[in-house]
Image (cartoon, rainbow over all chains, first blue to last red; front, side, top):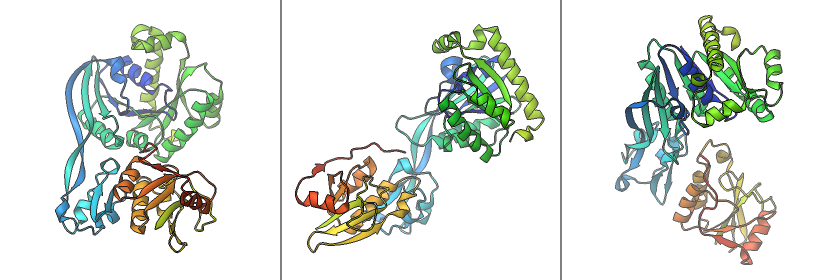
Length: 287
Length: 119
């Protein structure tokens, strides 16, 4: 069972829900932190590092004396990441999507592929949670290849639930994170900005054709526009997490709320029940 | 000498466009015979990424030695400066006005890219 946790707006509480959800589970569970620009689950779950490795993608490199400036590489590049200036090709590695077309098509065989490191994969063990996080190098723009690497660990977790924490927003990194999951939780706060981005996120999840439900976080903050919208559009509200100074204080200290407050442990246990039932029943009506 | 101006349209009267890579047109003005031509940049307007470097190549290929625009990103800047093109920063209404300001020597040279990239 793979559950992705996403939102439109940043800061609605994806990591809060992810970290507390996995810790509240009574058995073994896996957590993939795909928010590779700021993978923060380990701040709360901590745990020991069991594996750490650099991740690289392939990018073209030019053997300059062989290049005759024919521009074939530039023409076949779908991503505008290679250009011919002054009679020689120039590669912009940060724009490259590693498709290999330029290297394949170069008539002079002047291009070859080299590793271009983009980040680190860290595997941690924290009590009942096996955690894999991707940490994108500062200044790198290639979140998706690192997210896909994090997701490649899915096959190592055969019979346990997998929680996947998504980056905010609704662009490629979010889509690659949620794709192929069994269910998506949209964490939302009922404010003007939260509601605006929530509607965009709903459309994205529908485009990817995945069933989804909503966790209203900071419930009591803002108004009831999210609640009304969900009722009107038959979107299930899976849980409500009250807005309180105690929650904010505990979170800011790096505590896991379910470890310090049994009321919240119950909320997250109930959320697990909802999720398991919905995934079992196919959740087809929630697409 | 050829002068390139980022433009919203294909004529000298067209409104100046302050974007570089995603300007709809580049007007190439020849100060020797006062003729001009327009390069259609519509391919790059819709590019998901890398518009700046493609635009830089169009301009380098045009033979322009001077570029009049408002904002230049780091990747495009790298190529423009490597091609020996001088960049002058301008904020004005029309392409013609930008050219007039340059010819009067009233524009400040932009020695390096002045805006961040947006990946």
